[in-house]
Length: 421
Image (cartoon, rainbow, N blue to C red; front, top):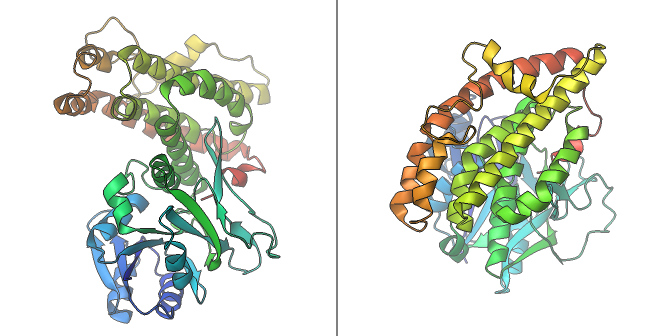
């Protein structure tokens, strides 16, 4: 069987020689390497073109993120088996053969690896699992000394996209990676969950071993947290029904905020709620065929989570300086004092509903034509106004909250536990 190994590249010049040299040393007889450069500015593409002519290089004109880069490579791939591999990995001997052999069982849809930290002794990943209802991602064995305790094949909920393999026909059945998880995080879990929905098993195998430096493409902790939280909420909206979201997730999320907002998740978490408000209607319609009233309830709950998180953030800050806490109405009015930061409720659409006006006129019609293709396109058009508003809110949150929390240095010692990839 021919294998295509696809490596999405973004500013990875430092790591590419180790990755490509180890990959080219694999003893599997028939495989191609496709490097998809996401508009790197550090000479990554030039390095590949000059030093590794045997590698097929595709240059994107802009950064499509992990999922987008993978999808470009998947479309170009010629193999029967498709493998996704991070740029900051080093595969050990026998890695590729072990993946191909594990995929010979027809019930296995996706295969993942034993992944170690660069010291070659500490486990980073032995399969993954999701903590519900919060949608937090975890890796089995993370941080443990590798003493063979994970040396058996196991069915798991997901495996990391840092190194995963699957057969070509899986793409025909479930599609590629969801590029809505830009720039990264949870697109791998989403891909595995979609495969499980149609009956495939996700398999972790210990014979395929990889060394991985982890999250080298995003070095800024604030941006890393933004990517994680936005991905988590998109994943939750896709894989919890709206009824589960309203009945289980919302209350659990408010409890989660109590600890998360004490560290670097403050700011990224609020940005994630706003991003989720933009995406929730389309996900609810296309994936769940949700009733208009349910869509409205999901949107109201996301705004409530946003406001609740802002109140918690302000309360903690004010407690530190000995002031009284702000009311919810004061939180809602904060934006009016900043140029270019429109109040969340003041959408320029005719509607009696104060919060989700951009969607109401359309959603009433959507109720009667829920499966029509034109309706989905129209929904996207209707969201242009809320997209513009969210961009203004994001700019304000990114700059002001990031600066504020860097100054007071309120960083939780357990933050790194949230960001398994």
